[in-house]
Amino acid sequence: MLSVDNLCKTLPAPNGMRTMKEPGLPTRQLLAGVNFSIAPGELVALVGESGSGKTTLLNLIAGLERPDSGSIRLDDIEITGLDDDAAAILRRHRFGFVFQAFHILPHLTVSQNVALPLWLIRHGEADSAKRIRESLASVGLADRADSWPRELSGGELQRIAVARAMIHRPRLLLADEPTGNLDSDNADRILALLATSVRSVGAMGLLVTHSRSAAALADRALMLGRDGTLAPFPTR
Ligand SMILES: Nc1ncnc2c1ncn2[C@@H]1O[C@H](COP(=O)(O)OP(=O)(O)OP(=O)(O)O)[C@@H](O)[C@H]1O
Ligand SMILES: [Mg+2]
Image (cartoon, rainbow, N blue to C red; front, side, top):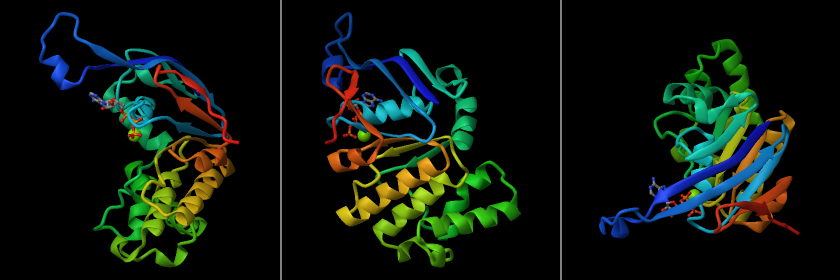
């Protein structure tokens, strides 16, 4: 279970305003008491205007940034209470990430890219080989294991990124605009893959998207508003 309770994050005002050097610097409350939870097997979509704080919220959940106040619990771990090293270890073991820019490493083969999370947690070699095969098969790219990223299309690269995000069986998948660089056919395929990957292993997923149809594919959708709080987002 992921539980986010009363999460608050204030940003310093843009540089122009900061140079005024007035007492009580102007700030912007990006997150003003954000509350939600995600249950095992559930995929939740997060929508909101550009600059509303969606990526910031993901960074806070991943322990990459610190909130002003509030709590983020993944199963029984209070993420806001971890130091940087502990947060990094937690990310390696329990989190999977998919980004808009695929972040596939060009000098590693397809299977080496997919294997990265297993290397990072020093997962046993024999089982790794089996998992890499299964995971490439699950995204329909079993025959591309030894290809180089430059030989793959954008849609294929993002399928590799999905395989890589799930190979170490994370508890929580964070996907930030994973279909932003894809045409609609490839986008649909990636979203379906994400949804199946999360649900089939009882993981949890949080998917940032600008698209209503993408949000409709999730179990439910939330909108981060200008006021810094979340509200249900109707998708149909
Ligand atoms: N480290 C930082 N310091 C100051 N301002 C920041 C910082 N990180 C983000 N911001 C600002 O916080 C706001 C929210 O940024 P964020 O990236 O979370 O938005 P977003 O909802 O993901 O937008 P998009 O849909 O464009 O990706 C923006 O106005 C951004 O400029
Ligand atoms: Mg963003």
